[in-house]
Length: 379
Image (cartoon, rainbow, N blue to C red; front, side):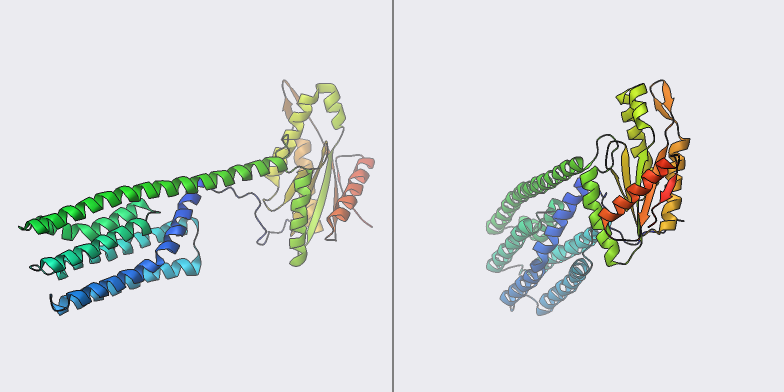
């Protein structure tokens, strides 16, 4: 039986662009906003120091304690991010925790600042509003990678005090409320513009990367069979063989040639020949593992590298491939074509050139012995 692969490199992974763009923005969000927690605490401590003697010391201490607790919760999220470096679904799950802890912290800021703001001292009300405006502006730039987060942080920070000021009687308080509202409107717009610019930048970057990867893949893929062309087969083969050598894993190489393929072209035409080659490529993609390296190395010649596979297991795999090809008629227009293949097998070294030469010799021996069979190279 074929042995299971152990942590072999995956050469076929195709990431989703939208998910990658979202991951890019979250990576930026985490790295960019890490200092914001400490700035938030320091700013709160500064405001408490300025309000000391003008409001209740117990309220100031309670507000600071609540902010410290919420900051510890946010620190736990950041610790998970930096420790585990999550990707994909795990990163999206962490995003929800980030959003919740951010909203808790910004709500404590907004509601707490309103509670500690002196109710009858306009100067200190103005000082508090100025600091809240600065916090909201910081949120607009700090969390712009995720626009909804930026909105939530700005509104929960600035709205409580602004709404309260609108309910007061003096024109000075009304003016503070109007000024804070205008600032909030401007910052909401600015955050949207910045978020859209980041989205376009990340999207373009990922699309260019994807286009480059697609072009690279096309250059390495045989157009008729959909598997590796000769150059890509050799390049990937060297990598996988070096991997097997480092980890002392067994490996085997198959070389396969379709029997009497010239007669298919001569009798039915080259279009039928192309159909046969396409069918063989489809068969190989379905039969072999993602870690196996398949390639079309010549006109009707194919090769396969089987990492972490003993020679005995490779013989069974080659026999299965030969049998599937021989027992599956191929539809070519209104006719069907039955093809067979001769397969040579080599193992016992980590030199790709030697393995291919030996497997090729075994394949020609299979043809000499009657075709449609598997032969292992023996010294």
